[in-house]
Image (cartoon, rainbow, N blue to C red):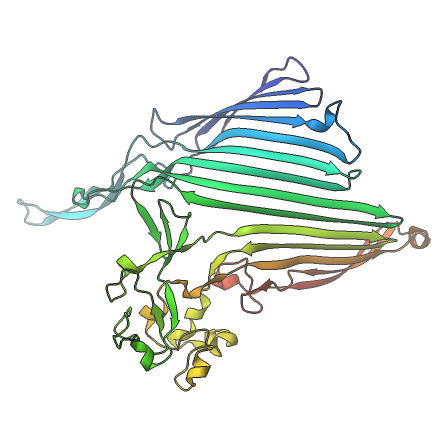
Length: 472
C-alpha cells in the first residue's frame, strides 16, 4: 500500500503482509535520484514472528544504498568509457528459521506408566509426561549485516561490460547448542550465541560485437567467498567429519592427518625400531597410517583429530559463448569450481569385501599382499580388509581437490532462408543439434558428476538431441 508519493523522484512505500506461518512484515522505502547521477535508497523493514516469545518477536532491519553515475557528469569524457557507476550499501536482514518451529518452548514427551492401586491390587495405566529439552524464552532473530562496494563499467561503444562487487557480512545471534550441566536432566538448550564473518566478491564480464554478417558474444562470471566463525561461547559443533568452532571455517573438514599407506611389515616400525602409533591394534601393512598430533604414541579421536580445511566451494565460475552467421547459430554454456576440498566416499565400498559394487578403477588401484613393494608404493587406496575402524576413519586421506569444469550445453542450429520456406507456407524452419551435461573435467573417476554429493545420483547422464522447429 503506497502511503506517500510526492514526486517521481522520491518515494515512500509501505507494505503489509501476513503469511500462514504467522509472520508480519512492514517495509518502508525511500528512493531518490537527481539528474540521473546521484541515486539514494533507504529501507526500514520490521518483521514479527510467532516462532519467538512475546517481547522478542520483532526485529527491525534498516538498509541504505547509494550510487554515483560518474559518466553522467558534464566533465566526463566518453571517448572510451561509455558508462561508469560506483555503488555502496549497508544493510541488515533477519532470519527466523532457526531449528525448531518454536525454539523458545520447552518440549514435553508423553507416554504411559503403571502405578500400583492399593485398593484393587492391580496396577493402573496412567499417562505420563516429562520435560526433555530446556529452552530459553529470550531467543530472537539472527541478524546479518552486509557492507558492499561495487562498480559497473561499459567501454568501447557498449561492446565490453564489466561489473565487480566486494562484500563483507557479519552474522550475529546465530542459534547454537550451549553448555548445560547434565545433572539437570534436560537436553542441552539452544541460544543466540554465535557469530560468523563472510568476505566475498563477484566479477562479471561480457563482450559482444558484429563483423559484417557475423555476430558473436562471450560472457563470464567469477565469484569467491570465505565464511569463518567468530564468537561461539567456547563451544564446538562436530557433525560426522565436519566441525564448526571459533576461528574455523563454517562446516570445516575435521579428522585425522594421514601419512599414506603402510607399505610393508617393516614400515610398522620407525627408524629407531619403535612401533609406530596406530589407530587400532589390528593396523597392519596395507592400512592407512595416521599422524600422532600430540606425540603421546597413540592415535586417539580426542587429541589427534584436527581441522583439515574449508569444505565449501571456492572460485565458482560460469560463462557462455554464442555466435550467429547467415542462419547458423551456435551456443555453448559452462560452469565450474576452481577449488574445493571434496571428500570422496566411494572408496570405502570395496574395503568391506563388496568389490562387485565398486567402480573398476578403485578395485585396480588398492594395496595388495601379492604385489611387490614397488607396485604397492603406487597404490592409490589401502588394502581390501574388514578393519573398518582404520579404513573408514575420517581423515584427509580421501580429501582431494574437487575442482571441475562442466560443459552444460552445446547447441548448433541452422535456420533456412525465409524466401525458401515461404514457398512451402512455412514462416520459419530451424534444425538443430544439442548436447547437454557432457562429462566433467575433474579429478573424480570418469563418468562421475562432481555436482552431486549423493552417491545415488553421482553418475553424469548426458543427452544428445536432434530437433526441428517449425512455425507457420
